Amino acid sequence: MLVKAARNNLVSGLMPQVIEGGIISLQYADDTLLFLENNIEKANNLKWLLLCYEQMTGMKINYDKSDLLNIGIDEDRINEFVRVFCCKTGDFST
Image (cartoon, rainbow, N blue to C red; front, side, top):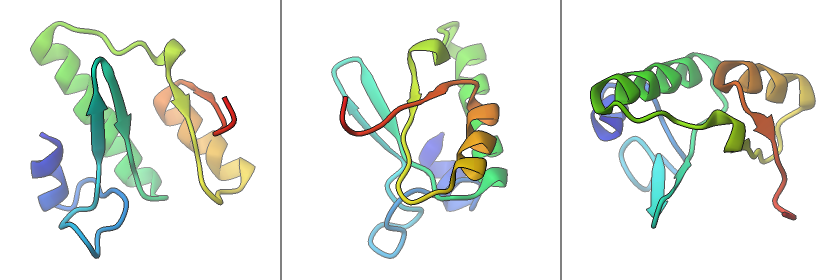
């Protein structure tokens, strides 16, 4: 779903100049890292895809255990993303 969404420019991850659509996700064991450019519209699209995933699989994403990490984004903008994903902010030190 993520690759197809990236091909249709609904979401885009990091380094789109290297990989078409950018790097959107990395998975290890039961952890998933999602990457997204600084774009609220595309963040809303990603949230919609995550809701679709929940509906299709019957599994639930635990946003209470999820952290939003950022690189070089001001606090007001971070708060916009937090509202979209209903999660807390984190940092790279923990």
